[in-house]
Image (cartoon, rainbow, N blue to C red; front, side, top):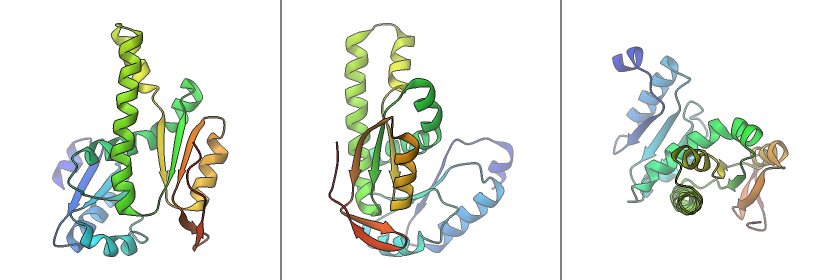
Length: 192
C-alpha cells in the first residue's frame, strides 16, 4: 500500500485465487486510498464465478470482474476496456470515433468475447493503417480512431449508452437475456 502513496498507476489488476476474501479486502482498501485509479478483479478459474457473480453486485469499488480462461489477451482486453470507457466521450465528440456496444452480464462470456473482439478490431485497424500511410503520426491517429468497445451488463446502462452515442453506434451485440430493473429479460441478439 505504500507504493500507492508515492506513485501514479493507470490501472490496477488484482488476481483472486484460492482465497476469495483477501483480494476483495485489498481492492476495497486500494479504492479507499486511490478511488481515481481503475480497479479490476481477475478471477483465477471458472469454479469461482458464481461467488463473484453474486458478490459482484456488492463490489461497487471494483470497475469490473473478469475471469482467466487461459488466454493472455484478457490483459489487453482489460486495459482496452478501461481505456475505451474513459475515452469514449472525447473520442466520439472530437474524433467522430464509432462505438460497439456489448451487452453481456456473464463474467465468463464477456471475458471470452472481449479478447476476441479487441484482437479483431486491432488487426483490422492495423491493416487499414498499414495500407494508407507510412507516416508515423498518421498511423497513431488512425489507431486511436479504432471503434471503442463499451461493455455494459444491464438494460438501463445499455439505454444510457445508446441515447448518449446513437450517432456513433457502429454495432450493438446483445446477450439474449440481461437485467432490466432487476428482472431478467430477453432480447433478439446482435444488430450489426
